Amino acid sequence: MHAGGAGGRRRPGWKSTATPSSTATPSMAWKLHTLERTRLPRRRRVDSVGCPTFDFHAGAWRVTWKNGDTEPDRLPAACLARAPPAEKPRDGALHRWVEVYWAGDAKWFLGRVVGKREGELKIAYTDGETHSHVMQDEPFAGAGAPPEIDDCAPEPWRFAEAPPRPKKRRKTARATKPCGPPEDQRLCKLVYQFLYHRATTRRLMYPSETVVSADGKALPAATLPEAGKGGFDHGPLIQSLGKMGNVGRGLDSGTVTMGDFVRAKLEHAGLQQGSDAWVGQAVLMCVHEMDNWLPNVNKAWTATTPEGGFRAPSTLGGLGGANFPSSREEIWSFVAFAETLWDLGKPKFAGSFQNQGKRLLTYLPLRLYEIDDVVAALRAARTWADACDALLILSGVGDYVGGQALCTFFFGVCKGDVSRFAPNLDATTMKSFCLCGPGPEGVVQKMWGGVQLGKSEAVKRLAWLAENAEARFQALGLRFPFQQDADGKRKRLTAVDLEHALCYFSRYLSAHDSLKAAGARIVHDKLAGPITRGECPRPSIKWFAKLKEKTAAKRCDKWLKGGVREAFTS
Image: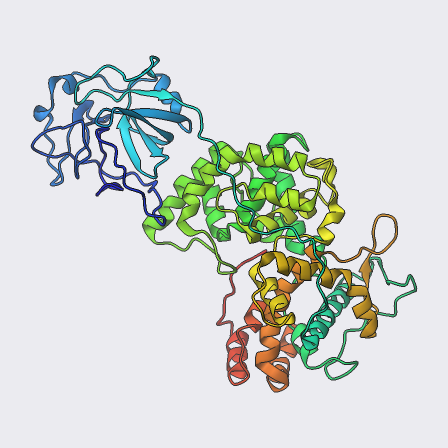
């Protein structure tokens, strides 16, 4: 990008052909425009060169130099005589694709209008540069180059079609070939014991929920495994204390709450259930949740929105009082609000997982132009892999964010009813396919010999763990409580379920192997009583994953004193 490209306003002269840095993100911030003192060139980009702006308070055109002086008498007569900007066709260009003519290159350059201020339009060009211009009132209607104009005259422009969206390369290949059993049988045993403990914990939390065994026989009363008994080691000491997700992806409480939130928002907006707008806005909100903004950021932005806008009811816990941007107006409003957080140096994201950072200020507007393609791809999806591909169309959405957002949309918003968005989708195909996050990928890599597998091979092994679950539970003497399907039969575990469970297991495994039996006993003796009596909150499994045997007692004391604040994640 040309030197000073993020600074003062430039006039369309010679367009820079330098390749933008791969890490550079066009700034969405409005900055004070300055001008070179000696002259007002119009046909090249030079540091500190720009155009005069109209001062609406003073009712006059003015030039502001770097030292703060204003010199209206140095402006050409054409500028001084020009009237303030009026409502013209160019004012309707906001958020649309346009071409601006750069006379120095004798060429039209494509960009999108991303902002408007004091009669100027801010253009984000497709080559990565962002510049602000005073534009002509009417779009140029002819072919070829427009007529030459004076240096300070508004710039020629015309409406343009959006550029073709580049196809995203699939990051996770579809698994077709089978794989053998795990090489590390210790880890394999720990995985299935972990799943059994989690499912049994849910039985105790929801005793009225119907569960069934694999053989159809009645299940014994729910009793949590004890450390050192029934083939279990010290693992139950850790699992009995930590917060972690359910075995089934659709049972996750955060997913259920988020589904209630999204449906309430869409009902408030008056959108017809299952319509393109309904599906599109629901998907954007599910992705927004996975962008990992702090809850206070969403609530602070919500407070800036007009009265009568959506505010989640307090019954939705941490989401109460919040709104997530999903419409065009809301997303542009959120981008403008979020930009100020960087200017003020305020915290923006939860620490629960990696996020895209400031790049989201670019990705959020792009998603507005991509969501129609996402909805169309979801409508046409026949397999879970097809549906995953649809989410990956969105800018800044990779395997982890896309996979989890799709699960939240399917299980939480649509309650597992594919007819609401994809009538031809066979949901049973998730038994052998999922988008795999780094935690589960690392676990299966350890289980299958520690060799670098890649995502497609990791998915095959998650499918293997799901397919062979019943045989493995039986071999361990565990009567696993399966959820009941609509036809009264057991719901078999899927690759999606295993990917979800191993996200938590990967952290449990870190705590299990670091604490060992002695450390796990210390933690249990310190925390079990206070947690049971409600004297302290239950730590997440992420907190446990950072514990070491030598420092476990000290970390537990700090937890009991309330000296630890965990990041929010649903």
